[in-house]
Length: 158
Image (cartoon, rainbow, N blue to C red; front, side):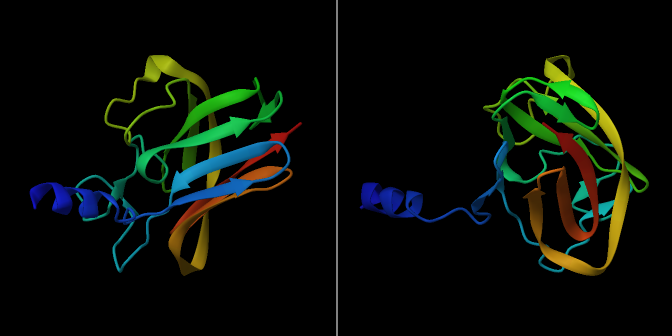
């Protein structure tokens, strides 16, 4: 009976489904959490889910993976084709975008800064209406993130 329960439990989909955002040159696979009435981003000591100034996996569950299908630029910096863990450091006024060489990670618990391939800082954006589900878009000229009322846009070029 325990084996049957364990098997049945393991067949349940994760609370935050894996979503793929893709265009011709970029593919981003991330866990898509929902706001569910929570405050998402805020200062240290607040009740927010993610704290300003702390490395975030930029999704739920496994670290988000971004694939550059060919060499390009992210935020004006060179990026070689390949797979990277995609982390961010949220901020009230700006976000730090991070590509890290350790792709297979659970969250940011074992994140190592010395494995960073690229860091770029971009201005924070905001929306008047909250976005319920974390949304990452791979556009032809930018990667755009929005969740709750916060977000960013980082330019890409190929």
